[in-house]
Picture 1 (cartoon, rainbow, N blue to C red):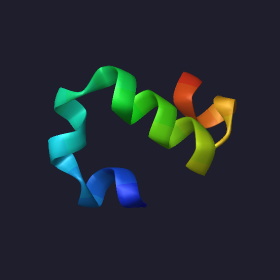
Picture 2 (picture 1 turned 180 degrees about the vertical axis):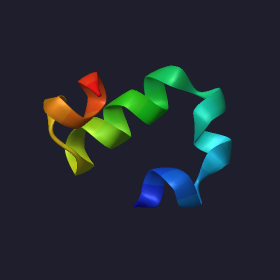
Picture 3 (picture 1 turned 45 degrees about the horizontal axis):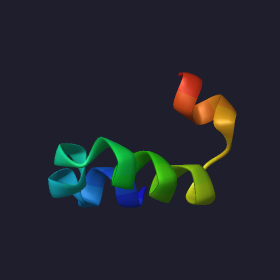
Length: 31
């Protein structure tokens, strides 16, 4: 998962969300 490889992205909520949304489905974001 790219999310874990890029911990720095965590700082940018908006960036992380938009970037994760495209990579992973909404279900993953919900947990």
